[in-house]
Length: 137
Image 1: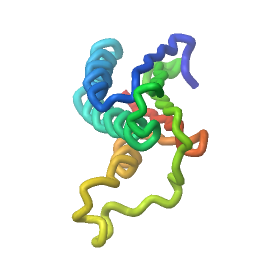
Image 2: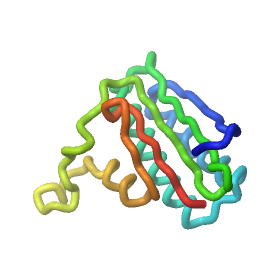
Image 3: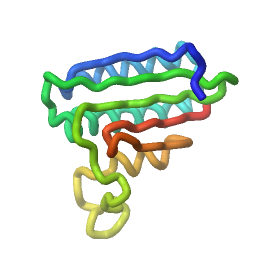
């Protein structure tokens, strides 16, 4: 459960806005005194989620936005980040396994796998257009 210190940011669906996400994550590290291990997991997870939201969810349509909502739990031990796009979602239960031999040479298809490995909790909703990630900090 998030505390009432929940904050949010929004940005247009432009691939160049991934730089904003990276700065946002650096700001989170400072704001919440996040250690290096957790920082690395958060950095990769959120940039993958933002990239998916921009490219796959919103189809790089600059009239659409990605919203990021974040906050700490009431004990200050878990950072929750919710990322929403304006797309139709996707079937997150039936994604190709990037570790299977036929997928090893593919240049895409690893984002959700990485997020699932690096976040301490991941919940998809809105048919996959919203992903909630929790990280122990």
